[in-house]
Image (cartoon, rainbow, N blue to C red; front, side, top):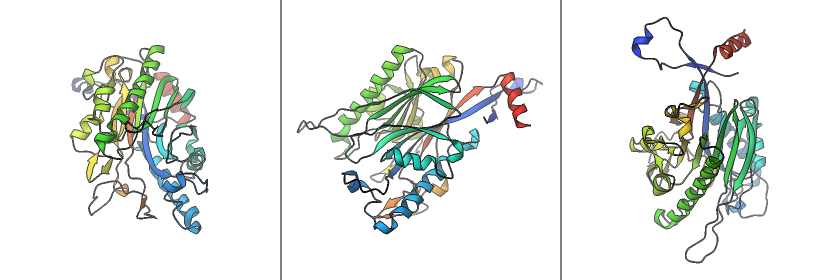
Length: 361
């Protein structure tokens, strides 16, 4: 059942009238880095070396895996629920080993009621981790999906750097067509400057996907979401993607990034080398803004989900995410990243309102 919310979009002088307040359907779009969600199977591949679970004693792996799934499910069901009254309609994810861990996640008792579908492709990443998209089958219908390969090479040797592919999914949210580009850009291993070109290449691949979608429909509703391993103010985002801080500066076929201002305001989604960063971001194209005067869903608000139960309470990393793995063991925490999410709103017609009221009787 869709949630109905009231928003005071009317002018103050109009609020004194007897006209009926407009009602809006609210949906949450989210992204979450699940921090090393590996299974407990010994695949004899390089990812076993990167899996904290596989480094543990065989007798505790199954228990830790189930606790990790519970932690992830506990968070996912709460993201955006304050306004949408439900779990996210669509959520991009990263740092998952394979489709099996996603199936285990969506079938967890805390999430199974939402009947999430899965879009996932295996990536050539050297750590054995992938991106994916989860979506409520009742809300979102997939029309097309593909995995875009990111080809980057070391300048010193010419050897390929194997990293995550980018997932592009197009579908309909309650009949409203939109696309999602799910990212996990190359890390800052070796230092930000040394690795910068790899993330610029990742941004360029995003831009290529955006241009392709715009060539089909110049007013495509597109979400760029993911762990970018760059802040909103880095060149990959500001220059290559030309993301805008102020929505009034966004024009057709341009991108708005609300997390630029959040970074300036001191917010973070992780701690990298003792500094707060917003590597996790969601950006939207022009047709999702009010200024585009488009029908259907539109962007309302961006957020970082960082409740106290997911946060370190004291010490060196006070205020930062309470991660799930540290010092070779399971901490009982969640992830080394906070999730990010945006609300979409859509005005409800009188016919839809009548039907919703009838269904609730």
